[in-house]
Image (tube, rainbow, N blue to C red; front, top):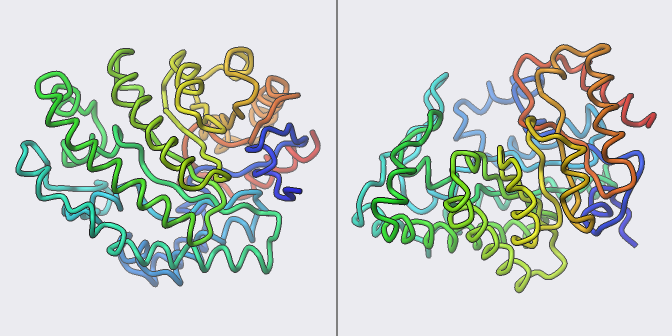
Length: 345
């Protein structure tokens, strides 16, 4: 019998009150995270220090008693591991040398990516051991960026904006973009399987920029790559559940849930949970989707929004989460307030 609430939901069970974890829960809203980051130095140094990365992964579990621990890392580890340069400028986000031609794709090293990411796997092993010892009902969730979203950064060279270069490239030179996605899929699959081997109990695919695409492009560059990844993971690790998060997918969420084969889909802040509950197949769990800004405000607004989501999700497999990541200005006491509301449901 599965005794971890998150894994029970991912197996198709409706658990009530629902389990909860928050995207970016291990991060800047916690004073203990900021202290650890100060010891590590840069963000990249923190990601590749297994002792400190494990510590920040565990901090919200210790503080809040979360039902899920999400690996502390970044979606751009895969392109870095393939040999694309990556830096994080303070206050400016990631920077990569843009890939704009076949030579840029050809230089990416898929075969060596897993070995370069070995420190991440040591973090997974440490977190899993600590959870087993001290938080046996908390599931460890590994993750990667989905090919479309990661490719956007690789082509654009940075985050933010509308990713116009990537969106033009899929129409102007779909063969080039397809070659990039093919390499990304192979490296991402190896990266995710290594996380599973190290102790991750579920995986999440973040497609943060899925909403940039029109429906036909969404099918080709979001649904199809994620479906291939899910099929390959299923063939290699049949019992390993996967959560997909095609952010801002809108009504395409239903097709994504149906065609990719994931066990759960994340709802972004803009998604109406009642609509999702009616239209996403019941065997696919839902996850989400409180507005992070409401968590900052707290009080009656927080209670109203949380209870509205709970009413919409009652009776189906559901994991409570945010519709995007925890903001830096979120008061930790508001997270405690949210958990009180959820556990009284």
